[in-house]
Length: 192
Image 1: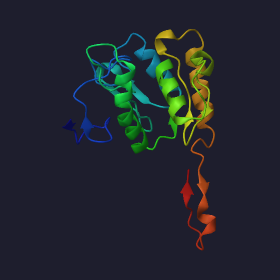
Image 2: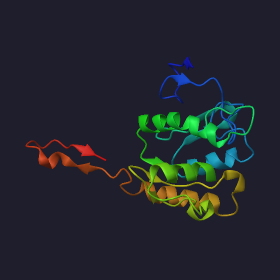
Image 3: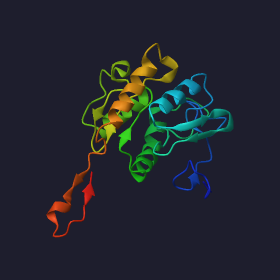
Image 4: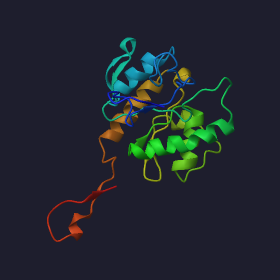
């Protein structure tokens, strides 16, 4: 691991000595880039108000409230096995909890199954990511919006995701409650 104090894309100041690859990023180090569908994917997220000023050529994305990661951050010299994913799960879980995410947007069937199994009471058996694409599911402390693998998008998938993201953001998706009413002063005490 290498300390990167000025890196805006890394909330921990650490970087693993490898780059992801299944969904892009091997050349840029930025998740979900370097694939034929990357431009459309990020333009869709931009229209869904999750990112701004996407410039993939310069490896820049103003992400503000959005953090990108992978279930398996390091690609071995073979396709990752179930054991490889299991070995990386504690790192993904720690990263997820450290950034205090409100909404999880798993991309693809494997990520959606992992998020459903780990962070919701909903099983991933008979998973139909096409049917779940862009829809809101309640999780255990998080909302989950599955995203179909961008390499498999067809007509309407981008619009469906944009509509789902904008609808979700128009609500109280943080699900905050003010417990300050139980205290003697007027200060709010917001919890999720």
